Image (cartoon, rainbow, N blue to C red; front, side):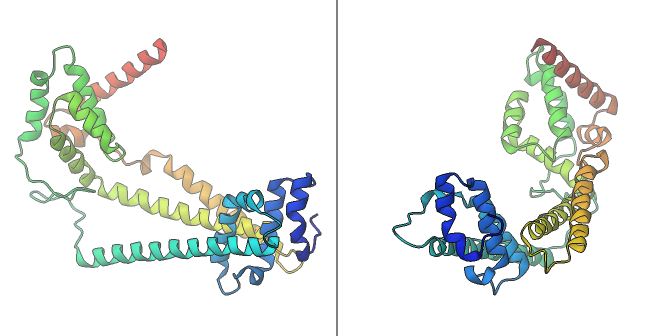
Length: 303
């Protein structure tokens, strides 16, 4: 079946129906045909990157081609051509959306001066507009937690608040709402505290985003070269050179994933930052983090 001529693509639905080949094998054969003869599917005018994206999309979404094809209505090649045209249209729309998004970001950056230093009286809040507040309000929040919560729940409320601030960059909005309710503090107050911490983490966020961008770029080429190795005409392709590119990009992608697991690239405020924000000492922050770990271990034992 691997030596089938391109004209035999019409027989693929019959081979699948009779059990001669699986649907997965059929998709791979069709993908090989699309890759090696792009002019037959309206892809000749597009660059290799675009064709690779369409091909990958076909492998992910192509099963309906085999499941919904009705021989009495059209030839399989005509049906397949129409399906690929739909994938091309989708990919073009995705490119336009990305181009518009990139353009909007560039326009915003060119018209807004981004301050990277945290200065008194200027709050750069990541994802939030700056909020003016009294310098003592943060200490007030901590001090009044005991009054707002029941005596038994005071420690739990403080633990929840510290953990929320410790995970300020990652915490979902709905969790913030739940924690503010649990701690009996204003929703807006907790959102403001989180924004304040994130503003101090701008450098870390920037560094992590850069690694993520490089990781995604490496993955794109890892995927691209994989597709080329799988479907290229081996008589006309420099396989060793292509394999070397694939190996380098694959290792680069894996390396960036490993880096993102290291503490240096985690976006997390220090205990000192949290303590300063709340007007308490670092030991208190450490205490509640330790307490949270102990509670977590206790819950594991119970389960």
